[in-house]
Image (tube, rainbow, N blue to C red):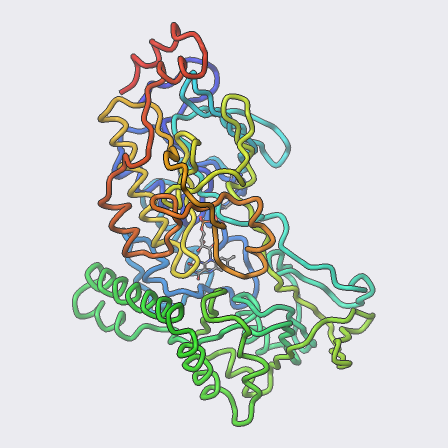
Length: 511
Ligand SMILES: Cc1cc2nc3c(=O)[nH]c(=O)nc-3n(C[C@H](O)[C@H](O)[C@H](O)COP(=O)(O)OP(=O)(O)OC[C@H]3O[C@@H](n4cnc5c(N)ncnc54)[C@H](O)[C@@H]3O)c2cc1C
């Protein structure tokens, strides 16, 4: 890669944005596969961990197993497969510390803009501190590991009269450390992963917890501990056991996902039967656990060891499926005429999606309209050079994809180095490429944001495959040059109409 610039702005080969699960994983791969590269992580917050540091609500845990949510390169060795937030945070932080990655993180640095110059074949990245101070860093390659949602603000629909409510209203994304809900009446609004986690966790101390949902979600109980994993670890050692269990879980996730898509009626029956068995006789499963949509049209919620069903069975929690008519001083009026008295209301109503951490991208001074770009292998954007983003699966554990993106990125960088290229950009060459929404989920948080997200194409490699085995073949073993344009700084300069004189020197300094 190119030598550091002599200008006062610092120059890096690779700049990683975000020190969450993905950013730490990306750095780990880069450090191992490209030991000669100069790189750093910029992180908007003051801490490592992203999601697992931000969310502090009671019971916070993974809803997929840690054998697939953990990194491929670092076995998950704890007993629990569905792990609590603290254990996940510890795992991410220890990964960073053991590899010395923590020393390369610049905290309190939010990327607000990234400007690509074709003449120089590099990004100029503007970062801003919490105090509003700005600085720039230039880099050859920009790797966005900034997650998929806004950190400053969760999603809360406007509920009529909420301002009149005399109790506390809390969004799970901003959980007050000192919230005392012991002996209080709590209403959790929502039906997603956060709501089904919060309800049993709060039910142990609250007087009563009511989960208020407008429509039901599929809820499936899984064992909190993976007996096979815990046995295998003793039998064949941590590393081998991890690899085997990872594949077992990939196969199971994949099997249930495909079966849900192909035989939705069968899966509906199976899931319904699970709920009927876990709940007391006569419980109204069809009102509270039988969604209108098919399994995996939206994410299926996993609960460990039936914790939600147990809280419902012992009466410490209740589910109400109804629509909010309005709030008053003491609680919530429902359209059915029923009223829920509450001291605390938790709005587990979702996230606001945010692509590329909200950074404004420009190419040679022109703003990149993300809504008009295609995703390439679910990790790059058509016509956007030297930029990769890490976004995990929606139907399986995030890290399965994040690890593959990291492997592919390192292969791509090696390919560029071997060919003496400074620039790579996916290019759509097929005029018949159809346009499809990025995600085919019907969840509210997806539908609210589709217009601002890039599209996927109707064909490979523009299609977003939510399929780990297929991605493994293409991202780990497939070519890195399909429908990808490679170039050198000097050629880029000519293309962008600049003088090639100074850039010949740039091209000359390419590794
Ligand atoms: C409550 C909750 C539970 C979840 N549970 C699961 C689960 O069980 N299984 C699963 O597969 N997935 C789960 N997910 C999805 C989850 O987000 C991923 O698993 C994973 O943690 C994402 O890691 P990440 O590093 O890509 O993003 P994040 O964890 O979001 O981290 C992104 C980091 O980038 C930083 N950042 C963002 N924008 C900028 C910017 N412009 N400049 C600088 N820094 C920036 C953020 O501050 C943050 O530290 C869950 C999500 C939530 C919200």
